[in-house]
Image (cartoon, rainbow, N blue to C red):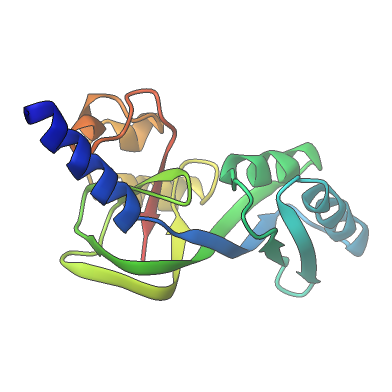
Amino acid sequence: MKKMIMFGMVVMISLATMGQFSKASLQASGLTCSMCSKAVKVALEKVSFVQEVKVNIKNQEYAIAFKEGSNIEFDDLKKAVEDAGFSVASLKVTGSFNDIKIEKDMHIQVGGQSFHFLNGNNQSLSGEKTLTIVDKNFVSAKDFKKHSAASKMECVQTGKAGACCAKDGISADARVYHVTI
């Protein structure tokens, strides 16, 4: 009976956290010219779930639209930028949410990804919201240090769920993205 109740709760949580990410804003660092900017744009356009990339050269920023229904892997965006010879300075992802209740240090799954919210006490995500990924190599080392100090959970340092995320139903070997709202 306990297994049935636990399974029902997992299904309900899964349904409640359904969401789809539609776009992202990525800033790259290390760009020195328009050719650098173009190299990053071309690399991002090759990522399977990317539909379109628009460049703001002045701000070294890329507006990325995702293909609808695609499985989004944020590490693939980072890898594309790094393969072009640059690094990610900031990644903000925008998705649609349906009344997802969040609290600080809470882990949830949205759009096939696992997220650890480093802020957001007693908030409800509804409609279109933007999350900032604050993992190592998605922000500067200084910013990562500041954000990682916001939580004592082991997943912040490793990027892997581990035992700290099990209480929220996240697999121990899952990739966990640490985010702020």
